Image (tube, rainbow, N blue to C red; front, side, top):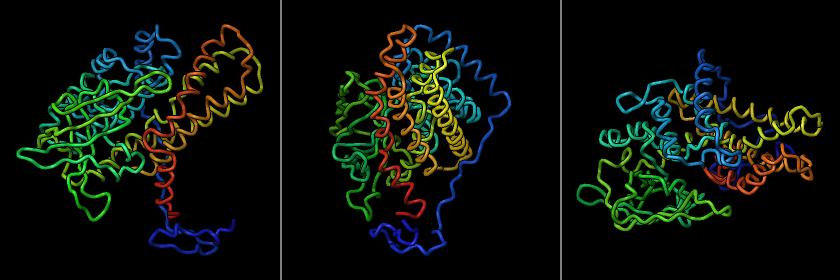
Length: 407
């Protein structure tokens, strides 16, 4: 197709034919290479030693659950090590360490298959959101407990009939004396069984000039009167997520995150945290390791070629993810870069088990292949969700297209 024949989306404000030899003004990506600071290897080895001692009995399939694995006792041990809330101020239970240290720790946790699901969301995004926008009361109430690995959060975004189209949410919060009354429901909520609190996106204004206006974020106690939560069994008989119903649930004014009506902008900043970390390309990593281990010492050109391809893709995504993490750590909001990492990362995570299945000789029942086959089977079933959580592939590519002037 000739460049001159490509038009913008006719529904945009500026539908026009591109002039041959020119390109529209576009967003300039910031994915510059980042070198981890001196001392990083010592921290990495410290974490590896800790994990070797703590995770020795965990099976490869359990490790393959990655950040969906949940063990509150293990989360408390990480808190005692100072490896949760690592970059936060000490007055809130943090350790004021650089973002690079946190990246190393979570990278090691994920590649080892540590059961970090209990505290994961709180450390990754709920805590930073409260730190940036929360009231003094909210900061004091939740941040020290998160850093100790004792307080867990979930995210209240998707709803029945409002999944990818987040602007279609209908859960409401009406102002009452001293706070708000919440009514509605949230769906597909990860960590709903273990979480103590939810940061929910709700409508606080019935009428708004735009679909994205009139939204606010509230911290809701999941044990409060009027809250009903139910887990949902997935196709592998696991219960990672669920639904929550709110029936006249009271939320105090100091549990509003940021300013009422600013929810949409805050959610977009939060999603950059959710979409850019190493969990967005390491969810199938256990299978990569099992592939290498099961073929160690053997010459198999097809396997060697596959390992080379996967290694190149993993390393490239890692460099991109480190770059985005660095940008967030310096106060930037790399929304589009995070969307790119998430989209490419989910593609790799879904490709990996399919490529392994297509390449290995599954007729062999050699003992060293047992773990490989079990992990492959688990991830073949689990991997379809990788392109759904944190924003569907279509939503992410729409964000990217808009930013580069194609929408």
